[in-house]
Length: 278
Image (cartoon, rainbow, N blue to C red; front, side, top):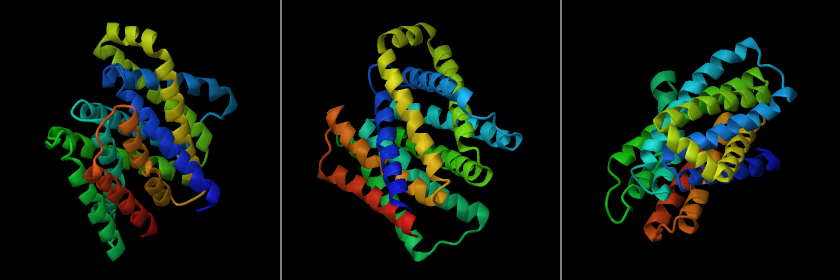
């Protein structure tokens, strides 16, 4: 991986942790998610005159990934409603690459190497221990919501990675993905509580714009990187965002990150590095 790609993906990881943190600020998670995605849709609309209309071969992938992205948002919101940001975010992001490996083995017949097995054990060990550090009590159902969120992440990562690396038109793909995805998420959140959605937009519009820009920039960088380096390498490196998430949970939400919780986050990152090396 070229050094510029490496640091670009690290920047994307930090941006991703940032916009996820904003989902936990002020408004209800589903409302905050809808507001942020509405802003990504507006940002994408501004880019439309500068990109080509996606070729017909891209549309099946766009439709599939819209479903996967929506599933990801639904379960992420459910998970955030159950636990601290410092718990949910590492579990959801850290489990994504593990799901990719499991799907590859079960459905594609790929065999694990010893290094890959070690990587899975390290990541899952970090995830398992991390789930038990909310006020000294287990996370409960939020743990499973976070794990399923990781499955949705694995799905759209594989679909989007293949689309942009094999079919091209990465900029058109990103712009149309975020335009349509933002509309779907905004309608979902608005239908949940229309009056709250409108009131929150008036009150937190500046937060939503910041989150929207960070969200789109983070994923745009990652999809570009997938045209420059193997998808698995980019996906694994992107999940170093769990450490940025740990930092944000400390300074933004004043969540207590004791030594054991830091060890859990580090274990996840070590496992992700091993996945990249495997």
